[in-house]
Image 1 (spheres, one colour):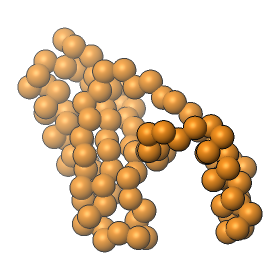
Image 2: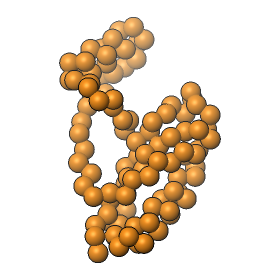
Image 3: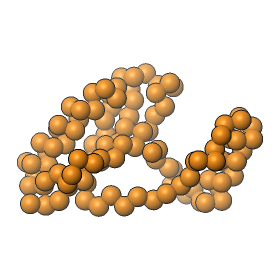
Length: 103
């Protein structure tokens, strides 16, 4: 899952996807847009290599307890803001979302 800039329409998305397939030879048939409703979440901007995400989730869980929330299940969302091959590993940014509910 990746974030999408504001203002992207369905037609612009399709045009860019098809242009990538044509010009770059990248298979894009399985690329699609969707909207996901997260509900109440604790959100954290993780700015380290992916292998250290566990520490960020621990911090999010501690924040949840401190503010009288409880984590709902063990599911979470990751939204990658950088490409790991184009950015230094210590500069990678990922949005982490952990579903919670009030106690």
